[in-house]
Length: 213
Image (cartoon, rainbow, N blue to C red; front, side):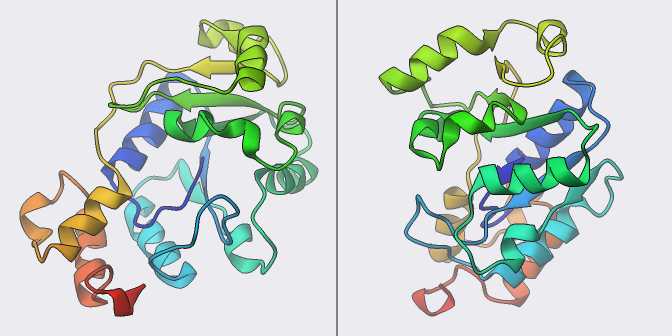
């Protein structure tokens, strides 16, 4: 499950936990982006984002963290990461989970069509966002979309499943704006972020002013 996780929030955890159950997965790895290609930058350092992720998932045995992109100075490409994971786990069936807003721009990703050779794509429908892919992505969607987990698991890779999870309408930008507006996260825990993550944000004064970016 890819993302900036800047910071990780309850919406991320809800997607991960629901995917574990609904897709009958053995485990989920959160794959934080190190050097984003499609965004201007990040707000918290790689070290802070990784530390918050560790705090958020420490009580979940089936959710791990893959920090390979954070350790690399190269641009973060999902294809490259999935290729390496497949080399390490050649017998594993991979499912790449992304938000619906990210999927709308999936056709702009580095060699995006090759990702279908490595994994299934799971699109977590996000409240407030519409599925509006570009023409070439829409063509792939029409060809690859399946309607159920059962049909998804009949193929080794290359299928797309649009989920109907009951997700939380939370974003990392919402958390950052709450802090930047000098609002305490204390009253919003656990609605926005896990308590340990909120404490970490407060302790390290993340997202509070431009100097923290």
